[in-house]
Image (cartoon, rainbow, N blue to C red; front, side, top):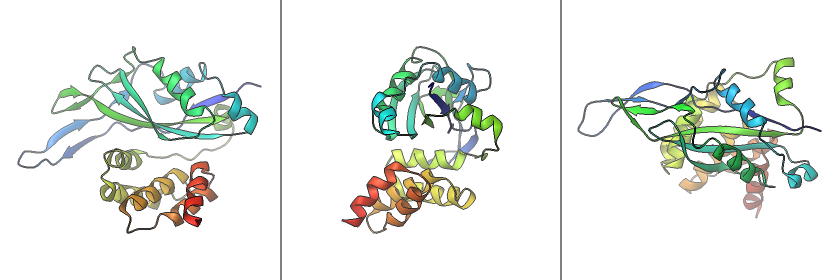
Length: 222
């Protein structure tokens, strides 16, 4: 049985003003996939041709998401691949292997600050499924998400600015209360801030299907 992979979560191309101390606002342009027809979906289809479903994950019936952070260079290439949400059973390693296949290719238009190309992060999810998610997407309505808020939150989370990230997760979940990743990472922010309990968010994420949240809940119950 063939396995499939869908690039589910992609960062949006936005232009914004970032206030910096003692300076005028700075123009920031985030990276965007330009190499493939269809953008993120075209990139997903290219990865789908490379993916080999890990035997351990297949035998255990494991399905789910690996959230990755790509560091996009000033030349539009993938400089590094970091796992931000693990699925385990060899899925993290397989996701990294597939992405590193494209390391030498200029897949992105690079991010810019003040008109100068520079390295920037790009967050998205790889979904491992034993069924064809691409076929499911064509045959039934799928939720349409605007991930700009989620990706801003992930940027602050990666920089350990948890209070700032928490505000964006709150805004994101107010719009998309059915997305388990929003609850998972909001819970992690609360745990890092220590004074706040993230267990209720982990519980909600688990109910929505997050395997990682189920593991984090074990610590809550101890």
